[in-house]
Amino acid sequence: MKKTMVELFAGVGGFRLGLDRLESGWETTWFSQWEPGKKKQWAHDCYVYHFGDSVDLSGKVTTGIDISEVDKNDVPDHTLLTGGFPCQDYSVAHSLTSSKGIEGKKGVLWWQIRDVLIAKRPPFVLLENVDRLLKSPASQRGRDFGIILTSFAQLGYRVEWRVVNASEYGAHQRRRRTFIFAYEKNTKYAERMDVLDEKDIITQKGFMAKSFPIASIREERYGEVRHTDISKEDIQTLLEIGTVESDNDLIDMTKYFKFEFGNAGYMKDGSVITANVEADSIEPGLLKEVTEAGVDEQYYIKQEDLSNWTYMKGAKKIPRKSSNGHEYIFSEGPIAFPDPLDKPSRTMLTSESTKNRSTHVIADPGTGRLRLITEIEAERLQGFDDDWTKNCLLDGDIVEMPKRMRYFCMGNALVVPMITRMGRVIDSIIENE
Image (cartoon, rainbow, N blue to C red; front, top):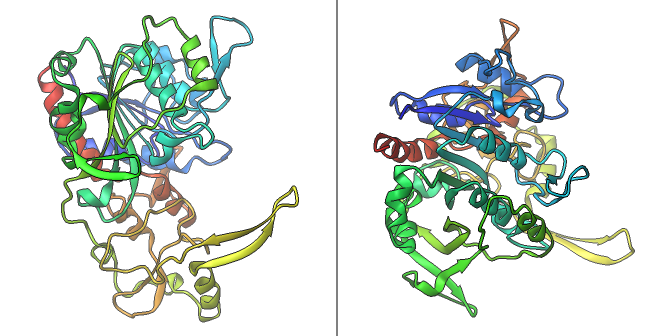
């Protein structure tokens, strides 16, 4: 089986870079990257600078447009579908034109993934999302992830998932993300997995357990936390899906479904086993290992701004009044100021470098003065090469990405070494196909 990939919501190419580093023969047949509401598509043009552009099966360049406008039948064939899609409202309803169809909320990108799965039937899928996906929405916890799992089940896919803190597997950043690995039931890999005990798939023999080894299982029951093995009683049933045509299952889930998903799990034919697992951690990377000494003056905090930064980073209890007149106390805890260099960094957000509570502030290793992290340091925290986001290719010309957008792209990116870890396991799976 050829190692071909399509990368959706590609950003600046984290999935592709992670697999390319394996040097095991991966070929990307097509990608898609489009930032809604933006006139200039900096991430797309950065991707093109590094990897070149690609055409779809119709011969058109459709990589930098809204993916909802792309005919999914024109997406090139591929072995692995990847994508880092946002956590949105996945609820569905009957379509306005047909009682047999469904429609999701406009702009929700999961349905674009589902359309690609229907049109192209890739044997393997690897997706990334925020960790709160498993518990959203707050009013109906687990519903959104349940809809995703049910969609996969209806299309004949098995699914494993895992919430991964990148620093527990050697990264320089405490970034928690949900990874989803799905595979068609007619693959040889599915045949091998189907004869295994479900708990063994989660704890030892599955894709996620091999990519991210675990130390123990943590069950939370009746207010107690205990370390134990998974028992048969932990197997939960999501849905008993008999046919692919039952879109009503998704509509019913929108209204009624709730489920307490653990940070690890496995789904087969709509039957789910899930548990909370702990990482068999390795030594994390430290913030000081990615920092430069004595950087340009533009990164240092001005003395007159220091009090504002101190206030933003500090603990607060502020009286507030809601729109209906309800009075309450808004409170938030302190954030380390400056960020310690002898620990992994906090999670980087798209607001990085702005005057914001979440922005990293460090004591420069050379001068001791407080400053923001540089664009290169932001890239290193995500495991990209230095100056990965510096250049873009636009209409044949090389242009520099604005400094603010470089931080934004890194705040949106994934931790590349985590993809490389999973890529090694995917390589072994495909070699046995």
